[in-house]
Image 1 (cartoon, rainbow, N blue to C red):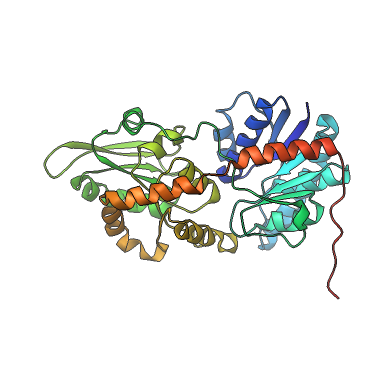
Image 2: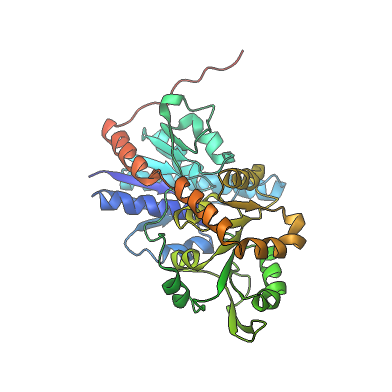
Length: 374
């Protein structure tokens, strides 16, 4: 039995794969605990996994604004001290960091104590924390085709994002019934990521009557602190009853993705991994202010692989037409689903589990020496 400490807080896109990894390690007889942030989204998601141990680390996100930068630096220093105490108490064999502001303190503290550090990046553009931590990493798990300059090829493994074990394709009719939707009518799901997307929520509210008239049900996950749950009773043009549902959080993501004919979504790596696992076609609307514009890169790759389409946020005026044209095109939907099935061939979680066990067995090592350009 080995002990693993997994840093994965700050967003659902970091926490969900951390949960998946912890579940996988525990199923193989190891101990795994999570290091999460103190944000509300982390608390909401982790409460569904009572068997997984976790600690909340202090810290705030990086910012170039002077006041926020000072607060970030102070909180990160406190977080390093917190992580040093935590590591001394837990004595992990390996630390795994999924990026975000919770990753740097535990990775640095772990390296100071000689513990191997593994990094995982799922976006097509590596984030600031992952880029900076490459110099202390024993391993980097990256999407196919990506490299971290600070991590040598022998320490790089190309894998996708671990997906929680409950995220699997389920029968469509049963999934729709579980969500309070009509099994006989089309469903479009609106997802704005763990924080929600106001522009997508607003678009959904403006179009629910028009979509209902065309026989399309809406299920919109608005994000926490973006309104209360709502259910709108609507009708198709022939008069059949339909619902449009708005909810701040969804505990039934497998059912939702299985129920949906089409998803309109932001392009975070976690969402894309779950779309692929459930073979759900999507129209992606990348968040235009994402760090390093990584969502645009994610969406472009997803579209090239044939999982769906991409539309710029500035072009939302044409989104209704895109939704209608795709959701009633059964040939195109089948084509998208076939491509998504092909994209999900590799079992990223299994690859990571075996590799992490090997790292733990090998014990402490040093990052590869870096050759600096003259």
